[in-house]
Amino acid sequence: MQRWRHTKATTRLSLALLAFGLIAFLPSCQDSDAGSEAESAQELHVVQVFAVAEIQAPRFARASGTLFGDERTTIAAKVTGRVLTVHKDLGDTARAGEPLITLDATDYLLIRDERSRAFQQSLAGLGLEALPEADFDVAALPAVERAGLEEENARARLERGRQLMADDPPIISEQDFADLQTAWEVTQSDVRIERLRAASGLAEAQRLDAQVRIAEQQIADAVHRAPAEESDPQRLYSLEERLVAVGDFVQAGDPLVRLVDPDPVKLRVNVPERLAGVIQQGQTAAATIEASPDKPFLGRVERVSPTVDERTRTYVVEIVIPNPLTDSSAAGRRLKPGTFATAEIQVGADAVLAVPATAVTTFAGVSKLFVVVDGRAEARGIVTGETIGELLEVRSGLAAGELVVVAPPAGLASGMPVTVVQGAVAATPPVGRVPRPGGAGSPIPGNSGSRGQ
Image (spheres, rainbow, N blue to C red):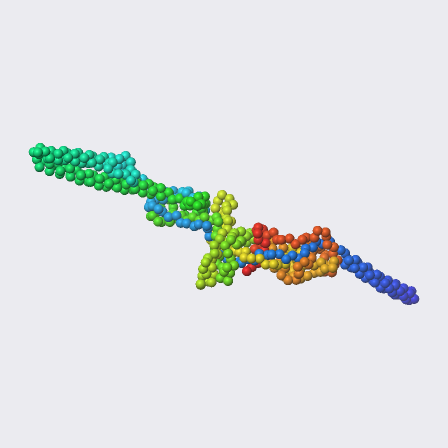
């Protein structure tokens, strides 16, 4: 019994000593942790900074519309006939003058041959081998020339008869002299008749020659070609639609194919009348399409409508955008006529504050960055705007000239001391633009921001 009591007392003493040791150890642990936190709080972060810059950000007016080809035409049949050959089909390209559809020209060949023979027969009747010039004198024709010689002979005989009548007594009778007078007058009439007949024969020959040339033109028109333009002989068309097939019989005027010239394309947008005078010819514009929302296509305002539609209170602006081939086929063009597109037209510039996009972190819709104040990092909430190349617009929360941390290191917290590295990032102009906030796109020379109008 005494032994049990002694053991119990010993145990109680041990527990008391253990508790006392723990109580003595805890303050030392707390002191150690506090010292570690203080040491961490005093840890210096080396950072790069950016002086908040005020830059000129282009101001844009946005509008939507439809893309059209530079030229769009329907090739119709010039002559009647049956389709013999289809040279181009949907999506094919055709340069000016290239054949598209050929009709059977057999009938026109026969007509040309028949009229050509009639023409040659007409020339032979006039005593000619070829059609003379427009100022040709029909007196040189053989029939007229012969009538003229006969008239000269009759006139000479009349003069001799007049001399014989003048003798005393007259050598010829009055009747013989009257016959000579009549013969001369008849030859004069013959000359006039032959001249009229020659003129008529010459006009007939010219008519037949015109018919021959018409038949030759019909033969040429049986081959329907891409239209040629003197101002742009290298124009390249794409076949938008083929409307006939081999064997179809077409009448003159029936549509055969539809062509479009897709380079450049024209984006026609309807702009509110409140922007009248703001959008002008020559302004830079960038267009985006649904198939390539992050790839803007650079263009320029080419035409501005002089009138406003009284129903919609808008006016039309036409933007011309280059659309070259990316390969040998028409499918290689990035922009297709008929596509819906959105345009941003640069109409001016605004002064805005901007910082590098890498300086800003966003979580749950809240954007913040670190500002260096008196050698320490200070977390600052900001309201951001649009992306301007590598910079981000700051609409509130900063002042020009403040130093922001470009790429905050891990573990940086508000109040921590920082060391600014030598050669801090300077405020540089933007190098490109992105069509919409937060987007990403190719830099466009001469465009450094995107502010909606």
